[in-house]
Image (cartoon, one colour):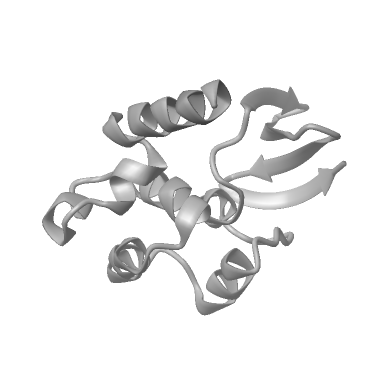
Length: 130
């Protein structure tokens, strides 16, 4: 019983946070227009709310090929950094590295059993490893 109350308390707290995926998904169309694209993508990752997808489509930032992968929660080489966030949500951590004269971001996604590292250069997914 205590665990259920704790879970409900956490969910209510998350819903009240202005940038939380739950809160963003409950926003009006007008409010969605004011949100950064990455915040919308993070919210879409968690609940695939149609108003959020509609606002992202209005911005014309993602291709049809990317949407297909996003809806399958898949990452492919060549997808945009924004599509990655739509597909996987915000990472646990972002590391930035310079290799020679090339800047690379490493998105770190952690789960209970493993970590996945996704590499981005110039806003495009270039590789990943588990």
